[in-house]
Length: 472
Image 1 (cartoon, rainbow, N blue to C red):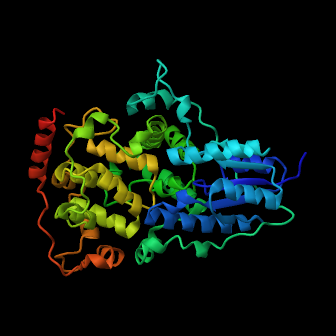
Image 2 (tube, helix red, strand yellow; image 1 turned 180 degrees about the horizontal axis):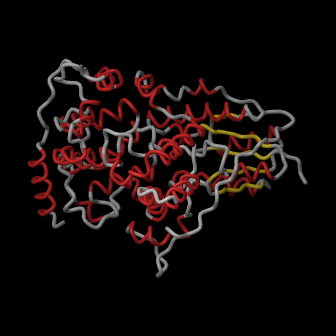
Image 3 (cartoon, helix red, strand yellow; image 1 turned 180 degrees about the vertical axis):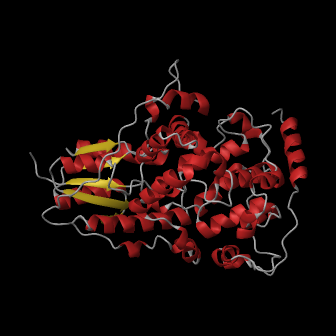
């Protein structure tokens, strides 16, 4: 057997357990060289996702050092960089975990074909999804366009059991040179916001596992109702870690199955949410236009405002729409890097329906601001809210952000946590918003809280009229 090293190319899979590519490399018996490449696809990430990725890379590097290994950092085009590392190390194989967005697929297809042509064992593995998109088909052979039938098809499928983390990783005789992570300056675009968001980050594989265990032990039983109440800790919070692969969906699935076997009422709903994530990737694989254009193409003629510089859009971006639920949710995002799921639906509905602005404006803004940004989930979430996505009833879903607040934050605890204006003693979390946002906005807690850009009832009426006029 050859003793040439195996390069394991890490991307959005920053963990050691349940990592099929790493597991295969370790079991080959050959030395393993973990690698992360800062290529154009890293460079084009938004401010918050790139900063959070940098934190994850640093943490993974420290974890590998604890196993007498290390993470080699290189910057440049992926194929060129891998070929350079192969020359430097004599590596005979490159293994990696699959990604599914169109840019990653195009890159990885080119890399695999070129390396194989070079005589290198180039292999991609699963791990980011439980069900590969090309393995889930309708009875007629097409792909699923509606979630519920998709769930019914996969809910009883076997899911690969999670793999254990390696107890050791054989090192090469000599390590290649590595960039220094700080030189990449991955948090530059976050500016002062990084210091505000940092305390809310749950970094790395161990923190993700703790988060999952806490959720299963203490939260999942009431998940059916608590997940809609933004003022309480009623969700798993795992989107941040799933986005960067610090935990695998398989690990979450098996934890959910155990909870269901223990008859914890919210377990089935948690499993459905994991499959909702899978459905987003399923759609992105089969209809990649969901990332950049209306999934329902008949919405191309809808007269959304596409100017992101309007005062209404700017007020939405700033969390100063005068609609408390919208503003609280936007401010939560600036302070924590994340936003409660109910809040995401409300702010997206308000932008696309009350303000009649293009969902792509919101998609782009979230892409820059969320530490749990995920290409498939972000796109499907925005299109679902806008009505242009895979959903049967877009016409009737115009969320009223006032009645939604009455229903899910009756005592206004969520609003008090995040909105400081006109309060005698604002919470520290609400004040932190002013530390996180750009100085150029010129905002302070001493300012009056604004009147609504568009009132809830007025916005709904305007949206329904727009749909009727277009025949929706």
